[in-house]
Length: 160
Image (cartoon, rainbow, N blue to C red):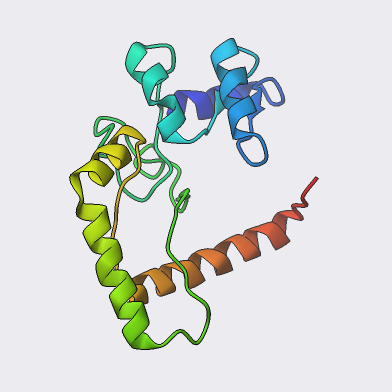
């Protein structure tokens, strides 16, 4: 990762980067085809190519190392501190859903996540299961929403 950063600084505008924003599949194909030098596509789609040696994982974007690639550092460990990004999924319910319903949904969701067939699917798809409480997920959701709203505003990002 540090070598890529040095190279990018030495050759401004010469390193092609594939954005996963609106075209993760295309960015991945461009990376595999050599049209771009670097990209940050989702891990699940890239595991086969990483394991086969077609691609080299330089870092993972989460706050901790991936259990699927424990030898690959996080971006923070690679020298890009203050950066963490996730593709995450969560279960949501309408505002005002009674607490007993939320509790039951949470319990049943955890049971489903522990099922061997679900665990197998998640592992195969490179999906790390957290299984947090509704309160923990709510706090994470609000924090992530605020972070990305600030970043979008700062960089002036627009949907095209």
